[in-house]
Length: 566
Image (cartoon, rainbow, N blue to C red; front, top):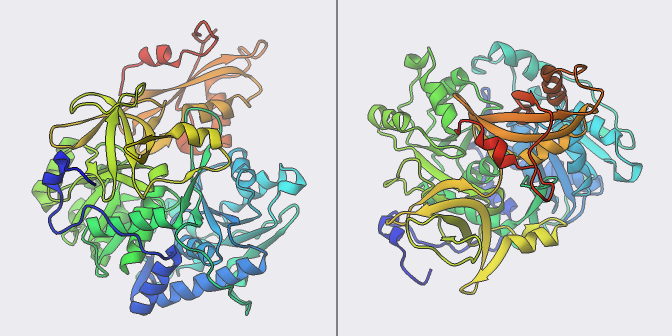
């Protein structure tokens, strides 16, 4: 950056302000680490260790299979999975097949999954046995020309032995979920293949034919209007933040990282998976959150690094077994998605000498655009602009930069910013503006900068609900609710929640003839069937009419103002 900014006083010593992005693909990170550390543990899953050489070999086998299925350069492949070794193998296999990873939230139901098949024009999907029925149900509802041609299905037990002595504690509710081997489903117009068969072949591996500018991942993000939009990330934007994350956190190949933030999400994918594969570190995988499992894994694998959302830390510290956990190996802890309460951050510092490092970013910015300097973090703070990043606060109307302390829209420029929205040129054009010869992305978040150059979030232009770090977009929930035959109108707002921070409430107008026939609980139950559980309204309130403006728009702010604010 040409000019000094106040936050440069707090820049980590010995670190450059910007990085040169390697002229390689993301696959090269795995290939390089496997060449350097072939026998080193890459992935640990309930006691089963997969080496870097083993990870590369399996990813290449799956890549050759994908090529044999007709996957070619630039084709989009769905990856619908919770954290497990197969997710990492499949992610890198898609990249090695010169294709594009479309990471999909495994909590999505069939009604939601249809969009993820049709919008990216995907013909191949990779998933786990427990999630395959939802994908098959979504696929069956599509016109024949939009359906999947191939589905690769793995079971959790393809990656670990539940009877092994070092598999560790499996919570009661997890045993059936992880150990059940589901039958291979049938696609309406295509073929399903199990994991073992997908990797057992002698098919040729295509030449690696992608570089920094080629599309690598297409994660979807929801917004204020309509269906989720695909964010086009080339290899270079993901590679920058993977490398920057490792550099910022002083990562080495000796890092042992607990991976519980989901790797389908941009933070888990870039700041955890890609960053650690770049470093040659060891990833200890958790398929979902459980405080006893987390405590056991940190203790037994001597975990050094843990990226999380604050509710996980709060939960772990509240465990009745907490005294039996050994957290002394932890050297770095941080995260984002929600503010870390002051009292909890203080306890981490006093008991473990750990400064909780918060960061900020969006799907569009390949996760971090901001992070707190590890040696000078501020609490409840987004941090300072990340490596190679120019971030400012501007007036949302005039786009003029504002003085410290003034509230405005946070805008970001740098190599981590995405290329644009898939098939959405108008949305892309609206998201960017030029200033000082740079292309700035409008985050839609309202914030301010203090006199030291640290950024703070104060409000949102968008109607986003933050439930335990899960982002819930009211427009998307409303669009799904309108499909209920009894619902005439619905307006989704946030309400205060003691554990999740915020939770979801739906204010509903029923169609004539349905009043008295449908209860609030009926609506909640239907929502559970048709949308990811974190989006489901916890509270439904029936009203005769929604407040509307003169132009007929629902005045959601009026309804929101009636609730005590989180």
